Every structure is written in structure tokens, then in C-alpha cells.
Image 1: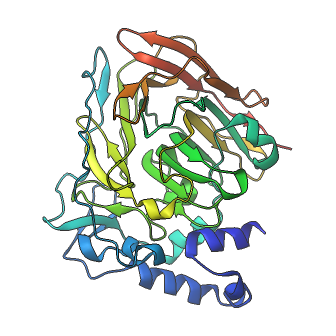
Image 2: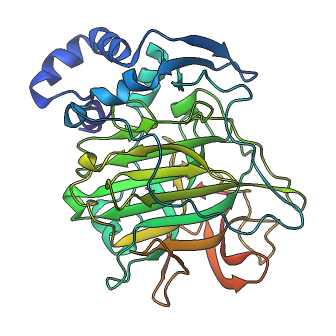
Length: 387
């Protein structure tokens, strides 16, 4: 069943095509590659060996989603993008994006090969952040730690946080993700947006820490990671959605990723901003999310460890559990959610901590600090986490 579900989610394959798909995988992959490929204005190869096509912004593959047939690309959000106080001490914001941006009017999209799609087929779906729902829906191969704000009186139109990045070693069938969640709706038809950094050989073919996104509008019946299916609309010619990131040093300099996802109240689209000052990467059109049309009930910050076939979960964050020193365990700091007026608000007094009972990770909420803002530490070494 997992293979069938991933075919639906990643490749847009209908249940009526499954019989043929299982017999003719090559044809499915070729169809997907053809759908995702567009004549580039320019092609570049990065220092990490990634091949990037610069595609006309109005001809990008994401616009082929059936719900976006008449969609006009929104080049700029209508809201003012908030910037918080600059870094302090040993914290450095990552320099996000391509060293040389794509030409004006084009956006950067990584070339996808058949090998990429084969690896992606085996990827587990992203898990939910609301602890009260996990027992019914969480895969036994996932371990999640998160701080969740689900106060129903507060409709949330965005989420912000900065998380430290580390180079960690994971097995070829493991993944370790560090992200924010926005979600709303019933479990079996959940609308969800996830963004952050991950180390995932299955997704990228290597163990570099990279930016990633994930979305679903209907309980994982649709959606995908990054740009593996139509949906997320790029607008920034220098903002690569799966860009490699610089890791921190345990006990030393910290490199952090600033993440803002905010709904444009005028258009309803959900914008992704990365870095400091924020780069306007692009947006998820409102048409994708039946239950995120007017804000969200739940936002969360934390991490997700996906176990390998041997039931062992990978390191998360720095590989160390939090001990109160932001230079030791991975953190999320300057936590805020966005209210109906576009104002940034600290997490409520009704936040919920969730730490998976396998005890391979931990999470500590430290509250507000003058230098770090409202912050949490999380992560751990990993270990045996599923039966």
C-alpha cells in the first residue's frame, strides 16, 4: 500500500492507472520527467554538482497542476515582510540561494533524473505535528519531537523561526528533518505545509544538509517534497528550493536557517521566505489547500527522524540532546506566529511539547531570552526507535 500511496502523491497517478504503472514503471518515470522538464533559458552546474535549469517563470512545471489551469503568477506578496533583529554572538545566517542567480524572468529548478524518482518512491510521507493525532496516524518508522501551538482562539496566518544547521551522518534509508509545520483540517483530509532543512539520501542522493519543503492538501492523497510534483510556484531567480546549507560547529559558530511561511490575506496564497534578510522564494497557491483557505489552527516547530529498515532512527540536529546551551543541541529561536493583522505573536501559554516515548531524542522549551527570543532546543543521537 505504501508504494501505491507514493505513486499517487509523488507522480499524480490515479488509482485506475496503478495496474499499468506497476508493470511499466519506466513509462511512468518518463512521463513524469517529461512533465517536469521545460526548455531552459540557461543551465548551470553548482559547486556541489547539481545541474540547475533556469526556466521561464510563466512556464514552470508547477503551473501544470490541474487546479492552477488559469493561475497567474503572483510576483510579490501584498504584505510587508517583517525582519527581526540581526544575529548575535556566534550565530550566522546562511547565505541562501545560487551564487549567480538565473536571468531575470526565470526561476531555478534542479534537473530530475529517473534515479531521483526511484529514490523518491521509497520516501515516507511527512508526519503530523499534533501529538493528540499521532497515535492513530503516525508510521512506526517515524519519531517526532515538536512544540505545537494549537490554541483554537488564535487563527494563525503564518509561522516564523530560526533553526541551527548541522552536518550529520545518516544511513541511506534514513532521513532527519528539522522544520516548521502549518496544518489544519481532519486527519484523513489534512492540509499541511512543512519547510526546513533535512539530511535525506533518499531525497537528494547524498548526505548534505539541504533546504526542503513538503505539502499536502488532502491527507497525503496529493502533494510532494520540493518540486517533485506541480504545486509550489517559484518567483525568485536566485532561490533554489533544495539548496545545500552550511553546517554549524558543536560548541562554536552556529549557522542558522530563518524560515517564514505566511498567508497573503489578499490572494490567500502561502508564501515561503528564507534567510535574513528574507528571500521571497515563492508560494503555495490557496487552491491546493481546502483547509488552509483562511489561516490555520495549528503551527509547530521541531524535528522528524525516519528510521531505516533495521528500526534505527538517525541523529537529529547536532546529534546531542538539549542541555540549555544553544551551541550544543539544535535550536529553534525567535518563535512567532502571525495574526490576522500581520503582527508577529509569541507562542501562547497553551503550547504542547511532544517527545516520542522511544527516548532517542528530546525537546526542551526555554521560553523568552533577550538574545535568543522565544526558543527551544531539540534533537539527539538517534537509536532503535521502532518495532
